[in-house]
Each structure stands twice: as C-alpha cells, then as structure tokens.
Image (cartoon, rainbow over all chains, first blue to last red; front, side):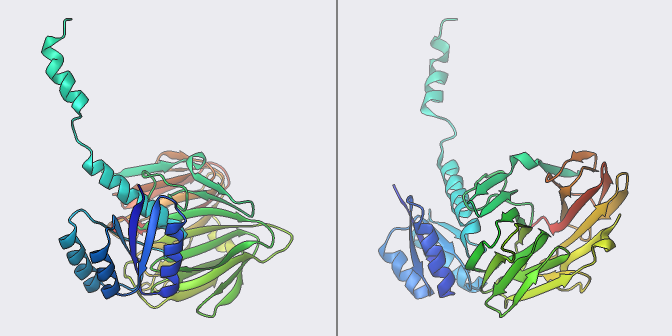
Length: 124
Length: 239
C-alpha cells in the first residue's frame, strides 16, 4: 500500500522539487500545498499518512496546522523537513514511518502468549 | 558521564553515480541507517569526489547551514544570491539556506577530479534571509595547532559564519604532536573526522576517514600517531 504524503511549503520551487522527489519513490504519493488554506482543504478531502512541513512556515502557523491536522486524525505523522532537497528527504520520512511501525507493534505477540499459556502443560 | 560514538570509515554509506563518488557518515539520499541520523546539530558529513568537468546542477535548499571544504582540486560555485566563485584548498564556504536558495557546484577543471567535504548542520533559527560567506585561509596557520574555520554569527571570530552555536577547526599535526581541544559551549559535543593519518582522541584510536563523536565533557585530548590532518566540529547536542 502506498504512503500518502501532504507537503506544505511557501517557496514554490522548493515545494515542486520536494513533491517530485517524493513521487520518485514508487511507495509514496506526494501532494503539494503552498498555503495553509490549500493544505487544510486537501487534508479534509483526502486521507494522508504523513504531513511534511517544509520551508517558510512560521512557528505559529506550524502550531495551528498541527492542531487542525491532529484534531481530524490523531494518528497523523507530522514531520519537519530540512534542507529542501533530496539529501534528507528519504531518511526523514522513513525514520518517521519506522517509529510509527515500532509504536504500533504489540509488545507481546500471540505466539508469546500461546507459549506462556502452554508452559505448565509442557512435559519436560 | 562522558559519552562517545565511533564511526569507522568502512562503515559509511557509499553512493557511486559515475560522475560522483560520495561517502556518507550519516543517512543521506538513498543511504538510510536509523543509527546514523546525526550527531547533535551535525546532520550531514559527505566525503565527495566529483569527476572532471562534472558537478551538481542547480538545485534548491532551505533551512540548513551548508559548509563546503575543498580538499583537492577546484570547485565552481554559483547561487541564486548572485555569488559566482571558485573555491580551492584553503578556502571555506558556508551558505545559510534560510527561506530558500538555489545553487550549483561543479568541478572547475576539465582534466582532474575535485574532492571536497559537504557538511550540513541544522540552523538554530528557521526561515532567515539566505546568506553566503567564504574565506581563504593560510594552511600554514594550522601546522601543529587548530585553525578555526567556522564560527557562529554572534562570535565574529575567524572563519565563515553559520546560524548555529557551532565552531569548526582544521589541524595539520606532525607525528607525536598532542593538543587539547576545549569545547566552546556547555551542551556542545565534538565530532572529530580524520582527513589523513592516524590519531588517538580521548583514548580512541582513529584512522583516515574515521569519525568520532564525544560529548558530556568539556575537553578532548588529541595525539597524532602519524602525520595527520583532522577536522574538529564543535556542535550543540540538542537541536
């Protein structure tokens, strides 16, 4: 299943570059938004797994966007992208997805439970 | 308690694009290692070799401090702030990408490769006006001592300016030379990258292109086990 990524940034050239780089990965689908209004509109009408905040977003704007997005989807991953190019993009997104996967992984597996429960019945 | 991390040269990521050979100490582009994301504010340490006449075409960056240190050959730089220059061994270049800057870096020579370090550190403030700085330093001034090449904007000391509480120094040490590096700011750590030769830093033996980070200390003792060149990066550990 592909990961849907909403990319928000004020510098049009950098935004288009980041969208293109995200879409180079066949496992990811990137959608760009240059304004908060456009980003909120897209977020309301489409499911995204990750929101990538790129250049030109002030601390206040970031706080507002985080509040709106997490209100609508408590599980949304919101990450800050630095550098504006290919260098860090892959690792930032992969690291966030890995953390999500690790957080969702049950601490005790069904196999562990089964072995634990079977313990007293095992003949040594 | 003093903490340390060792990155041996042969454990770095490597990309070979034909025109570009790049060794990555930290995760970069297609090299992803969750254990190698950054050392404090130091995010990228790329050891690049670019073939004759080739280079990185125009591409954008934002919110990153980008430092280039030529090791061999000449690098032709051009950016959207109107800077067009050639940097050579002894020169240091820094760009604060801030709200956004586009640049290109090409090998200025058609008949020989260029080797340089490309280093990125996280800025301590975002969305600033992009800035460029470049200095030419005398390599003789780093003989058996450290020569400062990067310092924070507030410092005004020698070297190029970055938007972070970070200081970089280069040293060219004769075998047996011992120096002590005093960390410049509480909360900073030091990452030592060996450009050539072998050194011992805080009892850790290091060979060419090894990297060694140490923090929660205020000084580091470095001894040259052979004639050596080192880069010392003093960066905030909290970003």
